[in-house]
Length: 76
Image (cartoon, one colour):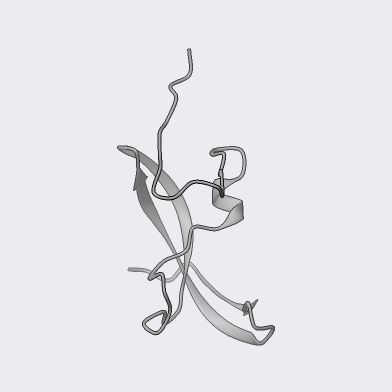
């Protein structure tokens, strides 16, 4: 995929690292969303991909008390 941008990102452990970003389509609930993803090696981590706050903001409500639950309400 074409590289959209390369920039410095502060990781969860506080270190700064250079990351590659790409623009792509993400499909959730049979809907396509254009988004930007940062590429990093997550093979030793629990989840292979994280969906960030900026993507979720104003689109989804997250209930942290639930596991593996999802639904979408269509606008009237």
